[in-house]
Image 1 (cartoon, rainbow, N blue to C red):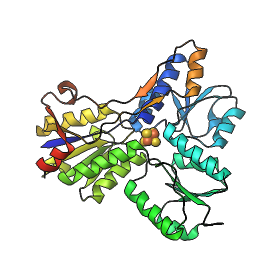
Image 2 (cartoon, rainbow, N blue to C red):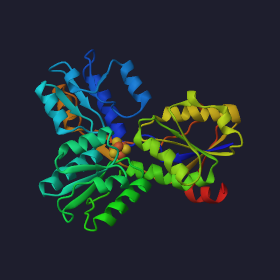
Image 3 (cartoon, rainbow, N blue to C red):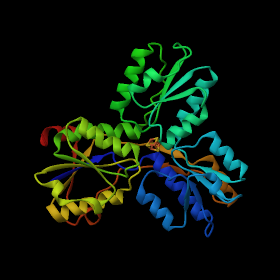
Length: 353
Ligand code: SF4
């Protein structure tokens, strides 16, 4: 069996930053209970590891004792949540991904300019709740083309659409085309809202999945971008499975599988991917191949709220950036017999077909 590891996969800069924020706060305040509003990122292992270090996750800021510290998750929060935190005199450390903040800023700006906003995304997702909360009177959520007849539109010439950052580009395209067909003067956001990490991971699946018998995606069931990766695999005709970790692997799934694609959602830690590689190397004598589809080099600065906390504790944050590097495959970590061979996406097209 050969296992083709997609690159890029796993942590994006926003997730890396959010995890870094909680790590930093824990380091700055040893012994103090840190509360995080909502799962810091949508990954069971990341959340459980922080719980193991004493972090308490809440779904209501009113559950945080007055005057304590609360960290807002990478998905962003609505102004109502910020106000509730302020009312409890909480010190809020904001780990919202800057690319989500960008969509919030667009919502605020367009609402001020008198636009109605059609927010394409999943109504029950934390990110949509946050963006919707920026301009609730001006915004309507669109989950599918079936929602379009129910929209209440005042002026079809004063309409803009925005999207959740982690949508399937395929699905979003279908909804946006349907909106444009109904409202020809619909305005688009100045830059794409679906983020670079979502787009790149999906594109890697589109490139590699057709060459494979099965696609495995490492990620949690509530991780939107991870679920979308399995859907993209299925869209190109290759079955996709989403697993949290190696413990869920069932040997029966791999009967007749000669080439397997392995990728990970933007919130899935690489050590889980390595553990799965070890399983394939040990059980099937698999060889590991890395398909470099995109080289990502995105970095974010630390949130201002964290910098203030660091300054208050005399910690120098100058030159601190958050950067994500492509994982390096090492024999020990990924399976003693593993040989990681780098193939370009072009080679993957030719060789595996
Ligand atoms: S998936 Fe995109 S929007 Fe979400 S945290 Fe990562 S970079 Fe930010």
